[in-house]
Image 1: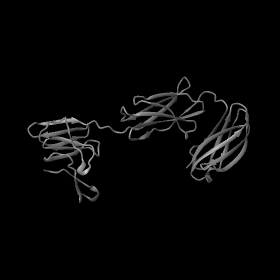
Image 2: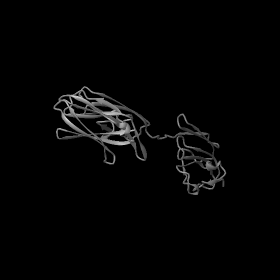
Image 3: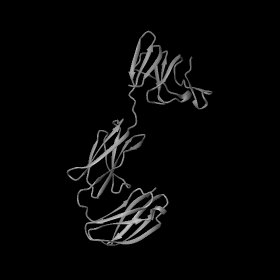
Image 4: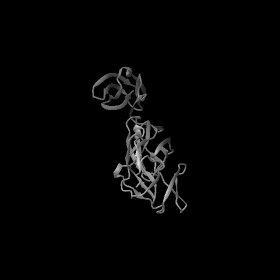
Length: 281
């Protein structure tokens, strides 16, 4: 019997281990990896083509490939451009087959615009999508806190969403079972409808050095008090100010002295509390 062996390249091939597993007692003449895989191995043997999904030493499980005849096979050749494998047999000619390699979804690119109905219109592209792919659309009013909006099937490439803030931020997450999620780029849409009430935004977000918060109202203003809270719930800065009716102000924050981390700005005005999180880089 000729035993198929595998080299441990961590030591340059000094040590080898048998991977014959349940192979019949017969010669093995050729071995290749399936295109796009580092685990699936294809063998050319005395009795046709055998494959395994996992090399596991003496416990490796080999199965016959029904796409090839049970005949002595001397050589295998892979054409990676279209994942075609050719097998040269003894007396039966050459057989070919295509291995449809399933790659993880990647490179999700998102675009957004404001539709005529006042909703945000999202569209995206993605590569290597399969029927197992799901797309989760997420929304954020400030670009940092994202919440799930809707999960869509693999064929979806567009979505409309209504939002009430002055700015809306979106991203799309592609998910597949057993694989890590793939995040799109973040896009923003500006609302062209009047925003009611008081709006609080941190500029910029994330923060590198100094920053400010923008406070806007299209109604009544008044005196306000603000507090800056770190991720441990500790008060690190505070201040007061006055917001004019139907006005806008920019209040500076001394972010240069803040350690890296997550913070929340709390602002109280007219017996109402507003919050806006941000990240200090």
